[in-house]
Image (cartoon, rainbow, N blue to C red; front, side, top):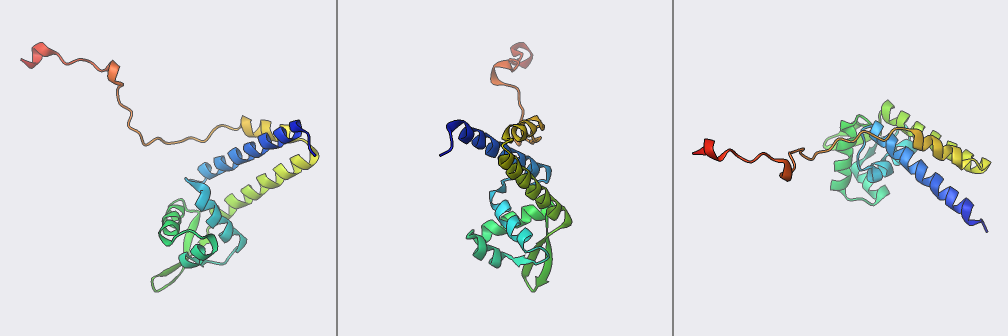
Length: 158
């Protein structure tokens, strides 16, 4: 059985890997990457083969509207394109940008596996923490806090 320090080190390394992969998502314009990652993996595994929404639903277990929403977001991010069209059915495939993004994913996961095998997870964690966090756009409005608002001039109102 592994000692507790190596388990903690592996856990920290895995979390660093997840952060690094999330950073890649943001760099490629992908938000809410859980479903997008599932769909992307299927398209990456079948390189050059386009899949329809119906096929993606059958392979992932997600509903049609959910897959369509994700595919629209991936098309806007230019990671996926509608490769084939037969009547109303569109088959999607990865773009060169999407393929390159998954190549980087595979490379990072391979590097992590090599670091674990070599017992050098600490260096992997340090490299992941040294990278800048993703720039996130906030959709919240930035207003003046309630306590800092100027009170109206009562004399000017009369």
